[in-house]
Amino acid sequence: MATTSGVATFNLDFTEIVEEVFERCGSQSRSGYDLRTTRRSLNLMTVEWANRGLNMWTVEEIQIPLVYGQVSYALPVDTIDLLDMITRTNAATQNQQDLNINRISESTYSTIPNKLTYGRPIQVWINRQSGNVNPTTATVTSAVAATDTTINISDASQIAAAGFITLGSEIIYYPNVSGNQLINCARGQAGTTAATHSVGTVVFSAWLPSINVWPTPDNSTPYIFVAWRMRRIQDAGSGVNIQDIPFRMLNAMIAGLSYYMSMKIPGTDPVRIAALKADYEQQYQLAADEDREKAPIRFVPRQMFYAR
Image 1 (cartoon, rainbow, N blue to C red):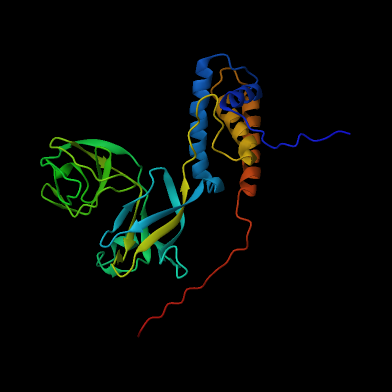
Image 2 (cartoon, helix red, strand yellow):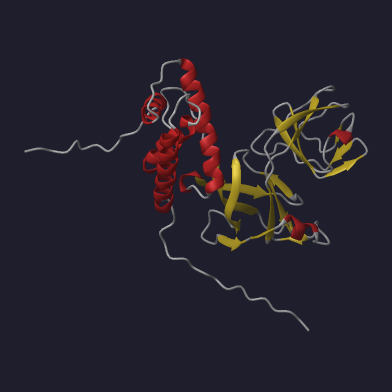
């Protein structure tokens, strides 16, 4: 009597992906450059997928402890966007409370008259920066201890009026600049550790994705900002790596990469290119329709009252 294999582990490493893609293009992979150019196209395609919409497997929970008096907090550098957000009090106890925090736009945040009002944060602006870290010509002019909240640099015009810098491996948030001094700095941000920095250390501008909360956290109780973020798909690795996608997206990935490569392989028939493009769109739509929440939508009305 015939039996099934009893396993469901099929996947493709990068070398097998390249072989399948070239075969669909009516060609063969013959050189190391073929691997390199296919890897580049695969990375570009996963960037495209991030622009197409929500990829469920890239959603993960993050928690950021909010600090009394601190407005801005860095997000992991591979964050694309945040989906749902709450502020949590009494964490890890039976009295834990998760309270909704509303997302607002930059224009709405900019119109808040007093951004340093203290209280429980109820609104958040997500600053979707590139994540790039760029060197400046500014340097540290006075030795910095791990506990210092004021940092002297040679030229503050090299950085933004408020934001993040990196000194060595430490990320530092600075809310105020006075002359060439960064004042009220929050040390050791985004999982880094506050450290000492010597005179002459180069200042790097860090354009990190971040959140600004309002009101500014008070000290009545510890708050934790909890969010579900959409992260970048991991880069294509070496020939022995599988890709950072679930098995249900394999056909869409192969179809899309075949289309991408068909435009690069010399002599590919335009009719084949068009067919590969159509197959890509069909396979991606099939996968995207499956890769979604399958629960009822719950709407909660929010009542607001205005005094006359």
